[in-house]
Length: 437
Image 1 (cartoon, rainbow, N blue to C red):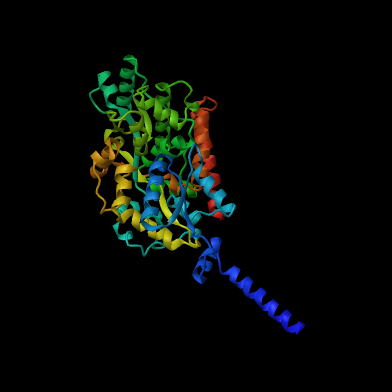
Image 2 (image 1 turned 45 degrees about the vertical axis):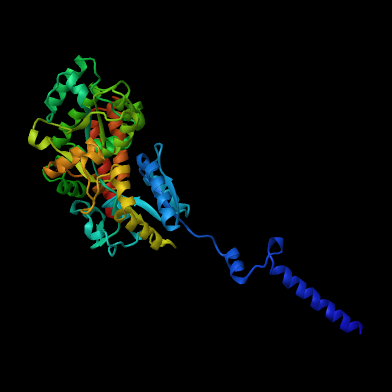
C-alpha cells in the first residue's frame, strides 16, 4: 500500500509540473505555437553603412517608411563628421561587423572589394542604368552595384554677388576667372571660400582637373602606371598649379584650417562668391539660405575656352550587397524597392536631390535645384570631364597622400617643383605595389 501511495503521489507531481509549464502568466493557457514563437530568434536587422552625411536625415526617414511597408528592420550607420568612409568600412570588416548594404566606388575600389560583393547582374534595374554609370561597377561582364546618383562639381558661384560686382559673364578661362576675382575683391566681396583642410577636396576633386584635361586621360593614367609618362615635366600639371595659386590668392586667410562644413556655411551666408564644391551641397545650402541664386562655373587651368568650359560628372559610389549576408535577399529587395517604388524615387529626386542614374526616373531642375540643373545642361551639351581617381593605383591611399603634398604647397612648406616630384614618387610607389599584388 505504501508503494502504491508513493507512485500515485509522484504521478500527481508530474501532472502538476506539466500543467504549470503549459500556463503563462495569470494562469492563461499557452499553446505549442506560442511556445515556439517565444523561443524563436528575433527577426534579423538589415544594416546599411552610409557614406553620404548630407542625406543621412532623408535616408533615415526613407528606411522608416520601408519598415512600415514591409516589416523589415533596418539600421543605418552614417559615416559623418569628417569620417573617412573607406577606413571606416575596412574597420568594420576587420572587426567582423560587416554591413549588409554599403557603398563602393568603381574601378580600383571595386577590385578591392569585389570578393565580398553579391553579383547583381540579374536584378531588374540593371538594364535601366545609364550607360555613363555602368563601366565603373562592371567586372568580367558582371554588375556588382547600383549607382547612387550622378554628381558633378566645379566652382559654385553666387550669381547675385557676381552681379553686384558688375560681372555679367560666366568665366570659362583662367584669365577670365582672375578678372572676376579682381572685380569681386574691388567691391569688397571675398572671391573664394576654400575648404582646404579636407584632403578629398584637394586630392580627389581639385587634382582631378589636371588628369581630366590630359588629351587622353585614361591612356595617360595607364602610362603613369607603367612609367612611360611623368608628372614632373607635364605641361598641364604645371598649368594646374596656377589655378591652385589663384584660389589661395583670392581666398580667405588660413584655408588649411577651413573644413567642409565651415566652407559651405560661409558660402551660403554670403561671405564669399565662389567655392569648389558639388551638387551634394544643395541640401545644406537650402537649409542655410533657401533659394540662394547659385550655379556652376568650370575650373579652368588655362585660356583654351573650349577645353576649359566643362564640368566633371560621374558616379561617386554604388550601393552594394554583402555576398555572405544571411539576409542578402532582403537587401536586394530593398534596392529594388528604392528605384521602383514611388517612395524610393521621391527620396532620390525630391528628398535627397540626387540626379538619377536610371533612364526611367525623370528629374527636373525644379525638383533637384539649380546646381543639378546646371549639371544636367552640361551633360546634355556634352561638356563633361571624367572622374578619374578611381582609376589611380591605390585609389584614395594615393589621393590622400597627394593631398598632403598640396597642403604643404599651399602652406608654403614646399614649392611647385617639389610638389610635382612628390606626386611622382607617390605614383611610382603605388604603381609598384599594384604590379606586385
